[in-house]
Image (cartoon, rainbow, N blue to C red; front, top):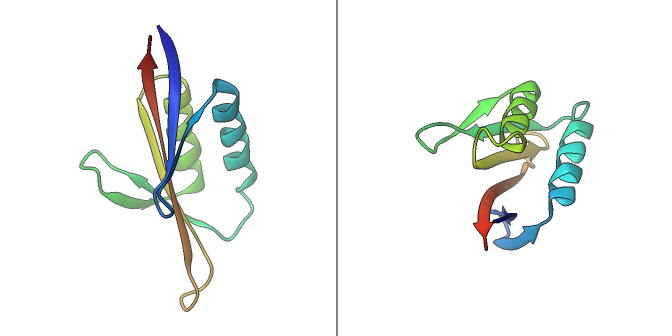
Amino acid sequence: MKIQYRIEEVTTSTDKTLTEKEVVEFGLHLNDLNDTDLTFELEDANRHMKGCSFNDVIASFKAFHNKTTDTFKVCMTSGDMMHKTAKTVAIKRVSTT
């Protein structure tokens, strides 16, 4: 059984298949966001987005990458109160034959 990943950028309705390498590259990109002015939200057990720390995002992505969970969903928001820009990304592990 081959494992594939589907990534969806929720805010723009973009959906595509990722390779394992691209998932790792996304994780590296996340790691580069540590010293930015972004705020983060992760999906909780009730599928609601909830504010969290950068370290929570990294831990959640590691759990996803280590196959502890099948999905990873994060919302990253930048800007001030007057001009906010949010981007929500969801990655799901899917099996194919």
